[in-house]
Length: 463
Image (tube, rainbow, N blue to C red; front, side, top):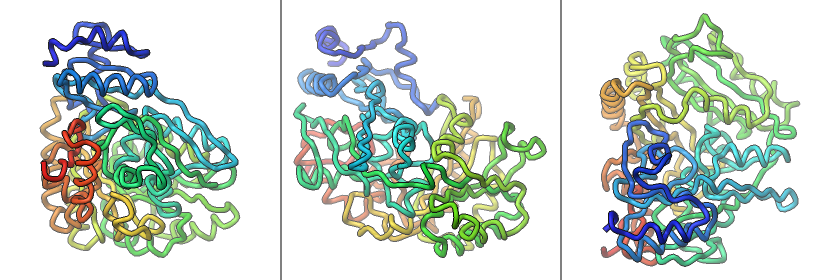
């Protein structure tokens, strides 16, 4: 049906552009962050406003056209685009509005976290987000939102106050604790299953001093990774929640500000972020700075926006990516042995493994309070094989699969949904644990025909 659908009618109804095969810019419009994804949609609607989104959803329903919804960021599995689909592309919708008195920020569905941080840090505030400025607000939020501020202020979804949503029938609602509360519950971790979110309103928090934090990487030799990981797992729960840090296995990038003598060297790194009062920084960071013999201590004061964007240039759009992930309640000695073995065999300079903490404020929220289910502490782990060269796609994918298969028995059973590739329904269910059945019931109410299924799909209950 898609080939004969009256796209000229849709084009005339949109403020934004409708790009089809053969049009200038089609290949650019269909390209996504992960260069491994090569899909050919029937059309890409670059939406300028909510009315454009409504037009697209109604058009898809009227003409039997599959819909794929794309925000402003990454999506590991490339599920913002699909063969033969109409792509509802929100990336032109990038407005932000800060209310410093109410301490909130409203962000359009196509924003990146760089857009939001630029707006909020000017007021000395931020809302919990991720670890890259190029990450999309929509995708990260709808999957839960783990980031530098999660130990202190909770996940992104814990700070979501309201969302504007275009539903599967083309109607428009505002979801919040007071309006459509079941939908609001589902949006906080349930992904893009329930509608197209055209804007988000978040609670903001003071960070650092005027938005200036103390952070950066501390790098250790890869040979010391086992000792570093054991020290880190024991130390982190004892630290004040104003200090967070994720740990990874990586190759030192051959670029400033890293010293040239370290370029290309494999390392175990912890990227720290302290958001408390600077007068206490020396005391809080003392146990970090007292440990071991690091190759590099990169801790220093900086605007929060600088830390959030520090790795964006190293990971531009278009690289080949293969992701595997799980949540871990602990970093066991057996798991550390696996990390050491596979970390020493990082296949390319961009390939890496990260463990992001889920503790503090994020772990104090009941597991059924939002759709995000893994509230019982631990780390969200991700293994990514990454390289610019498509010829290395097999190499990086196999390394990630082998690493994951060796590590999975030590996991909590499922993964942070934002890190999933297209891995099947059992993995989606494992990501939601005991919340899956309620999500399926809400899906039946708001999208009974599963219009929004190009995602980590939750099938409508009874369907």
